[in-house]
Image (cartoon, rainbow, N blue to C red; front, side, top):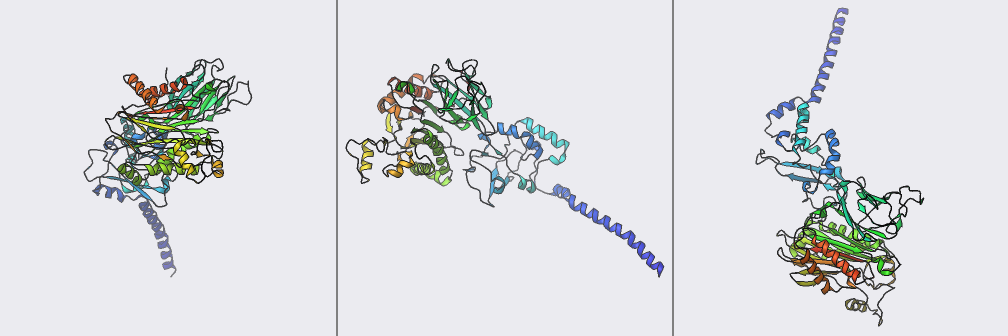
Length: 584
């Protein structure tokens, strides 16, 4: 009996380690899944190697991190999938899956092969307006492919196939195109008329009297007075005073170091489109900021502005006009906006409106159904009306307001253009198509005939000789919330023009200008001046529209206008691409 028990114990001692060993081997097999290599060999599904593509579809995490900065700099609109209408602005809902079918990447693909990428919305919730959502391009330089091919040779596990498990784990990179163009124009002082422009990738731009990018012949300007640099983290241009003797102002606000005379640098301050930089006391510099989209404008655009401060004697006149344009609107390649906002009681309302109006128009047109209706009916009245209404609702300017004129331009598939305008106030727009003069705006001054009729119909007619309401000569504007609470006859309802069709072969232009221009120049004379300037400079290789805008502004100066004057000139006659470079 004791012998049997001993044999039983020894048997158990042998089988228990064997059982544990088998369990370990089984766990290893389950973890490694060696059978997948056999199934992949026998599977009829096609796998593309790096050598078959100009660039791998998916990068490993380490390599993606190494190339992150280079990708951010090199990616542009051509690589983006612009047909994903309004993707960066649309709210993402939980569980939504977006599928994008990519074109064939190699002639070796079979006819039935396709690539479908599943992008789960939860993974890209942080997408913000202005960012470009794109899948990695398949047309990168050969050096990139060779680099990945070497990595693949070193490690076979880096081969990029199109198995479903890899595709489901693919997360496209959100890449912000950081390129921007900054243009400066000296609008007053000894160097008035001097201009220069620079790209964000070109490094800082200095302003001063000695060895500077913008060289100002002004005794009140220091040798190295101020510097403008591109902040890649914020995607903003920043201005900093370099310890100048007479200080630097931005929109009449001092930005120099508080310890005057210390020659210490001030803190960087963000720049916006339409800002006015004052160096010393007489040199004012107008800031114009454009994105890379604007370098693809399929027509010539010129802008010019002047606060006309010298026309008021010793009293300084603040610049309250803001000019802007955007072509194309982000994610909407067929549409663009051009506008002027003329502020009163300050520039804040004009700045707010010039920022909001393009955003509202782009947001409305991001709906493909709305866009198709505009293209089909050749009418964007509802888009413009809603954009003005939403802008007015979102503005928080209680004691400041602005006139606003916005020209919406879009193109059809035959490269014909359409233009429609909306405005409140007295910044006017006129078009000339094949010699026919077309007024695109309505004057909303209290003294104008059409506006007096509207005011009289409210049941509280104007008194004889009354040309102002609460001190304002305008009856329609954006902002001025406090005055609108006191006086219900004030309105933000825009006048909307008929759509103007500009055929491909037409000779046409559009002129937008603030009231400082129209106070001294009639519509007829403005058209004559523009046509004469176009004929004079049409043979030059420069931007004709800039020449026309400059000549019109000079004429307003000559006639001694006493108000801020801003001009946007849009020439449909020939294609021109704006170059961002520092002028010599």
